Amino acid sequence: MATVINAIYHIMAAAIVLLIINNFLKTKKMQDAAMYVVIMIPLIDRILRFK
Amino acid sequence: MKNSTVKMILALVAIAVIAVGGGSLYAQRNYKETVVLGPGVTRVTMLSEYFDGIKGTAADTKVFILEGQEPGGGVLMFGGAHACEPSGIVAAVVAIESMEVTKGKVVVIPHINRSASTTTQASGGFPLYYNIETNYGLRKFRMGDRNTSAVDQWPDPEIQFHYPTGQSQSYVEARNINRCFPGNPNGNLTEKATYAVMQLVEKEELDIVIDMHEAELFYPVTNCIVAPDKSMNIASFALLSAPFEIVTFRSPQLARGFSHREIGDPATGDPDAYPFLFEAPEPFLDQPTGPKTEKLLLDGKDEFLGKLGDLGLLFCPYDPEEGKSIDLRVGRHFTTATLIIEEWSYTYEDKQILFSAPTFEEIMANGLKEYFLDPAAEGAQIEEM
Image (cartoon, rainbow over all chains, first blue to last red; front, side):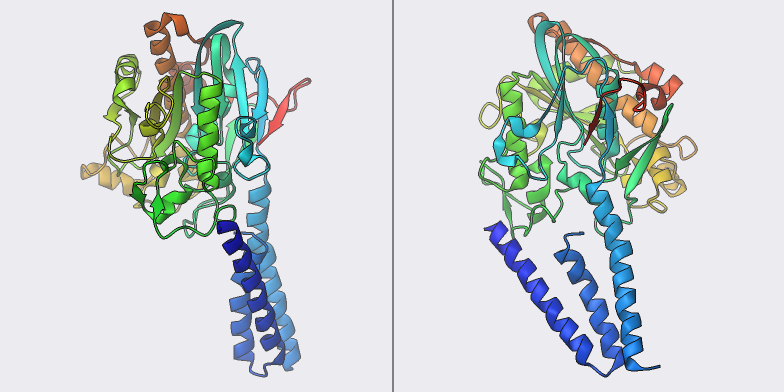
């Protein structure tokens, strides 16, 4: 069960990163763009299994 | 500045943060420590030889066997149950590189929870590595965490239920190998690792199990041996010969999952095994200290802890000028282990374990550096772990 939850978590994290990248590319507010970058970093670290 | 330029800069900053921050964690997770096989090592294997349920996982770990010419008793010495407590790990490596067994068998596992040694404590500000000075340069070790890495075992349960008693524990104990004995072949990764250790103890017919830890000076269970009633006579007599101050604690009957509680229990562990857990005092682990640097980890000198000592708040003697060096902590573990084995051999002549090893006085006089072998020497047999 834990393995399945772990896999789902990683898929969800990847999907959220893709949505954030989409928002990052579309936004015209630079403050929002900076926020998207900050949000993305820990999610990417987790997808890459760094920590 | 154009928006596209700002976005490009932001993206580059993110990539740099991930590469520098994440890259160093990735490197630590994959760093391999070097061990030189001493003249006493007769076989090296993996823990999965005793339970293939951990084969190929982060829980599988190197097992070093030192067997004498004559049959006798057997002892397992392991470090790294809590991988943020380095002296047990280093003492195990010193045993591999310097011990020679003439009768019986000594089994050594430096990283009983290898996964825990590949990550550091979240928000702890711990160094990723520590280096021990040897006669042949620095020997580099990974600084680990108390628990199995969440990269290898996640998510945590709301409540951890100890197997097989069902006693409820804090959720975080699901990844604490020293709350998971005697293990479960169908449990989580940590429980599988402890199950493999129990299989090793049984299949190798080992009599003594020594689990080497470190503890805060601010914590009552420090500077001691923790043992169940069956092991207490051996522990008490062994300590009569100890050239340093050390006390014994009785293993609590009602708290489950500890190595000292379960390994020798006829109901859950191996009735023929006598477990002992050592706690060396480690200032680095105390909360009220200065920065958690490699220096503090190695010399154990901290002025804030000295103030607490002056106020009588510590549970063992502490002089901040002297500290609690890694040489002292490893020397204590190593010597306490040899005293236990000697007392065992005196008590049970039919299951003697005879060996040669450096004494506490020699380790303190010469320094730990004398007891590491040269990995670059001709014919040196190297293992990575």
